[in-house]
Length: 176
Image (cartoon, rainbow, N blue to C red; front, side):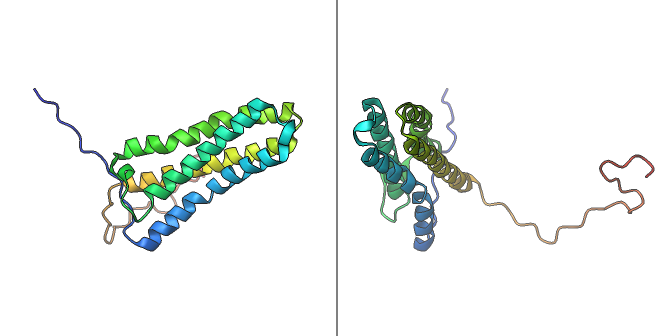
């Protein structure tokens, strides 16, 4: 007996090149703070940063580069093997670097505070927010891509609204 497979939901990209560029730009915008603040922390902390903090910042920077690579590849006009993935599989690909950032940022922030690097700790909070925004935007867009077009209602009838004498308002007692 063969199992029937449900059809794979595929990524539907805008066909308009300008719309695709806009989408790619919107997704790249939150990546800039991830990469930029990682680089600043490494440059400015110098020898004061413990080796574990430096290693974590480098891992975080690699996650930011992965975000950028995914964004550039999937939302490009060029063909991409990633676009052949089902939407759930592609969603998992996008979650990986964001989850790395979500896991690393709080721990690295604690390490920065312990190393008396308060500016680095602030930057790590900014990185965490930016990575979260990137994933939110990806999820928002993928949710839109997943939805089937909804039929438009033509001339919907007004619902029968009771007369104002029987309309209840929140907080009003019966018979008010």
